[in-house]
Length: 112
Image 1 (cartoon, rainbow, N blue to C red):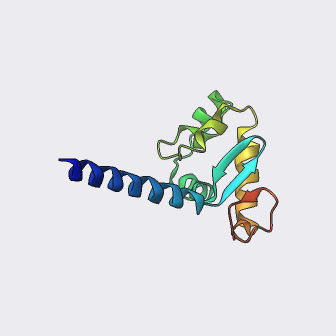
Image 2 (tube, rainbow, N blue to C red; image 1 turned 90 degrees about the vertical axis):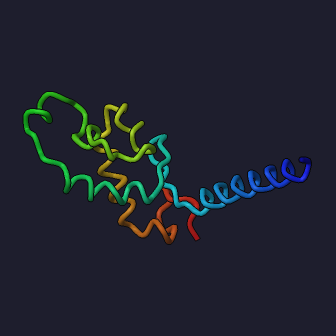
């Protein structure tokens, strides 16, 4: 019984460290108080292509249409609460294209 408990604790610890290791290998962009993963920002262009543009929806809302996309990554969703959401999304896409993975941009962290 005790051996099973120890084995369970060890496997739980292994899973914890794998998740921790995976999160430390991510590249993050910090911009105007938001911290998002580079991979999430790279998905923005794909999401925009998949969206069906609705001028009516865009006219009714101050939020970018991306904020209504169900597949918007979780770490990008808080940006939609900002009045500057459209400009923040635009800036993040520019930063992501600017060799963020090589840490050439000061807004990027966690890269090698």
